[in-house]
Image (cartoon, rainbow, N blue to C red; front, side, top):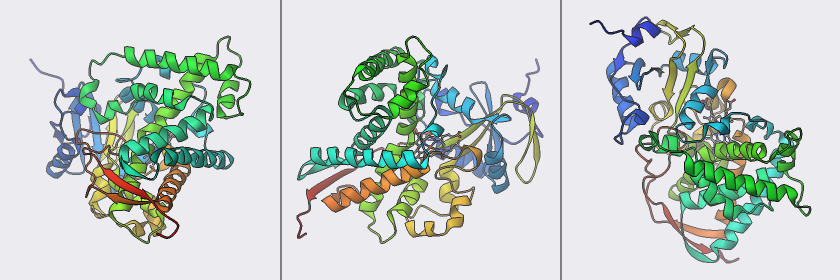
Length: 408
Ligand code: HEM
């Protein structure tokens, strides 16, 4: 019996094909960076992968990447591709009716308010650190990030310590940090956590002694609804999950690299360089209507349902290597180079870049002026199974610290 060749039907001309299996379709942990780099070495810069009944068209050439980043949402959707990844881990109803989006958060005025919250979050963490001790860089960055994010989206009166475990249960990053675990996972724990967050939102909104915060802006978007708490809680959850995806790990990479490689470069350039090296992200766009995709060598007719894809760690280290050299970011043209991606390019580039870089710079600067810090590790090793976001660390990255005296 003849079998239908899905790639040949969906992509014309037929690109070379890899037998790589996407990690969420495989029960075993495998390293997607190694697998996709091997496929590229054998097949070239454009190739197809068929996995779990889905056809992926990977592209890595400069023209291919340009076409990838330029494609419009109505032709090939990032939103739908992200949804398909996150919904493996998170309750579907969370995505059903959202009224507040990350783009609503990051005007110039708002970012200033958030930075005040950042100082408040760092003050609290520094107080908890005390005079001497040790911390794991990735754990510490998560605590600062939670406090900063929840302080911004819910106000400083929010019971942040109680909320952190709920958000850790909901964390969408599990879908791409441990994709092999997401298959068949139930969402009962996530639904229960969502319910508890809803309860906190209800209690916060009922308080009369609360300072105005972004929670009120979110609440205004729901004021035509009899019981607005579920809608408000859903908006807060998705905003904070977007924050958890990259910012916590990017802060950790930045702090770790600054401690491992002291430099005169600006902390802003240190943040971009740390994100370049830490990027572990696949980028996906789901084709919604047939269109022509050019990689510079071929024009492919791509049908609906194909996922266009690229994988940042391959290109980010190809041209610039693995060495940490933050001064390279003084060359502004690097920010426009599609083969190097920190916060994205084109219509979907990150709306939170300025906020995130400011948060990283401020946290690293405050810690460095308060403490003498000594890393008890000599490199950051990415979690091998991860296929999205900035890398989580495969090993502990412990730092010993001692508060500076005015004379040290
Ligand atoms: C250092 C921290 C961060 C890094 C490295 C980062 C990286 C990125 C990248 C590479 C993209 C483009 C993805 C693509 O083209 O498929 C992106 C988009 C996006 N980021 Fe970030 N991000 C960070 C922080 C944040 C934070 C804190 C938030 C939200 C609160 C956020 C929300 C978003 C959203 C909503 C998009 C999609 C924009 C759109 O589709 O128009 N990011 N980010």
